[in-house]
Image 1 (cartoon, rainbow, N blue to C red):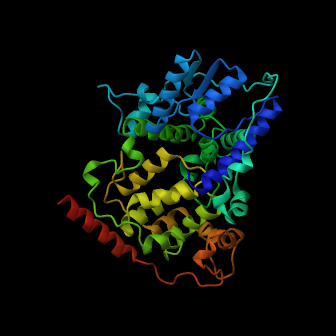
Image 2: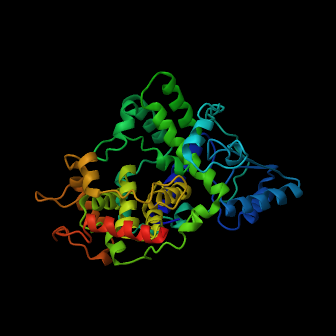
Length: 426
């Protein structure tokens, strides 16, 4: 995990610990080999069963199979359950029995499926005679890599189960109706903001599904689009399970020889929000200040890096993995490969987002850009905070003028990308 996800995980664990204490229980923290740690806990507590939510990466599956087999052989009940996704990847298959590779038929397959409603949270949990030893969360130093950026990103974080439920109900009652259009407007508060809560299990996809389906039944015009986006996350994990190369390699084998550039000086300017393209730079600075980035902006900056700057999608995916508090490995990899044109159900290679055109359409008054970029009349708080959060090694000066020229003209960058694609396709 990168710096921001680890920082956010620490906050999630602290909140979960408080929640458990509220019902008479505790969170026990242990580090080390999973099987060894569990066996030690079983011996010290007399536990007879171990339950957990399933994982869907090759590493997680291999680890959990070993744990399950070993514990069962030792007479301990070991059982894993659905929890992280709505639908187990192997339960959604095409008519010929294989995995879906295109989202729309996947959505049609699951749209009318029924899911059991989540059980209510317990009001109390049984207390053992003696508590197992626990490591102290602070000793894990999960937030250490954030350095001075931690106090900036903390202003924008939403932590814990209670906050997640508040966000869900506020969105469905106040903003869901306009979601089909407002979700594309980074200058508006048009999305649910639930991604970071989903990433750390503070709210389940099942809870969101049922709440969304309820307002769908009430005729809310934005509810189906909202639920569809939730299923898009499931689709990412469906693909990661069935084609795990999605997480670490170019998904379409034919694209693995495409001449993208490795990390380079232009990519570094992209990371620092200094490309000279205001919409791109505003989005990159939003990422560093808040730990999040509007979804429309994510598509835009990904297209710009992989097409205008001809840089490998993995460079961008790795930076997002460092900076996103809502980082999700499957969604991140699929989103980047979609934008680059090399992934499942990808944007066509010839679709190159125009940052200036996107700004005119989705930030018509420039409010989003003004929030994060230096303007003639001074810095807004978030724009100023970017300089407070950025590493000192970057040597950024808030008094320095914004780049007067982009690192590449939009038309020239687009033509260069299209020529490279044409030559590659032969």
